[in-house]
Image (spheres, rainbow, N blue to C red):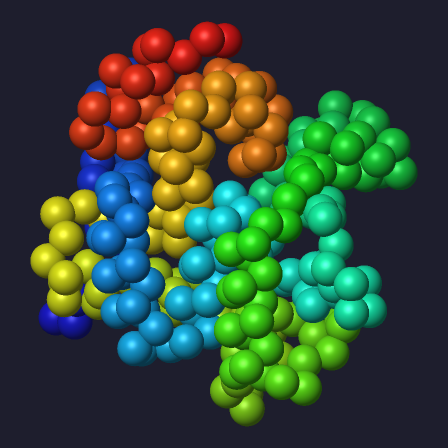
Amino acid sequence: MKKSKRIPSTYIKKSDGSERKVKTKSMPPQTKKEFNRVIDAVYAKNRIVAHSLHMQSLTGLRYSDVSVLIWSDFYDGKVINKSFDVIQQKVYHMVFTRLTLTGVAKKEADRKAKEKANVTVYINKAIINLLEDIAVLNPNITGQELLFANKHKRSGGTALAIRSVNKILGQVKAELELNYTLGTHSFRKYLALNLLNNNANIAEIRDLLGHNNVKSTDSYLHSFSGNLGNLIDKLNY
């Protein structure tokens, strides 16, 4: 029987005795050296995917949001923006659905969902360097073109599906003999790890990741392996 290419899953028991399947949590590379090994291995398979994952590690965005970034998000003509706002797709749909189910009018639900889902991305030197690398691969990129558009002729100019990206990451995990699961979320978590190691407080990490409250951020950081739990316990809320 053909083996599944999906992220490994496990089962947990519910209060009624039944079992629920959950995905194995992805983890971030624990060091810069390991991060570079992973990105280099992905680059050897697909340069666009490697760049998109690298962008995740610099912005903290989910893959679904990175995959729809356009060139003009970063550049106003030829001038580099200092920052730009992103409406997080996952958060927007969760909030919009919850509000409309409680009877809120769609127009008002849309406004409130966008407000809750908004996160600011700040552009630094590392992001600028990455954009320069992307421009080398795609010198004719236009302002409204997706930054990480799949070049396959049947893609329609969209980004590679997350399932395909996770398939590549599964191959890289096996090749590098990593003892943790790699997923697109590993690179969002890698930014959180770097922020934590650079003495960012939990409120700052919350804002940069686009969480709505520190409880979400606390739970998120506790999902890491190693000694991060001890570091988190020392954070000042």
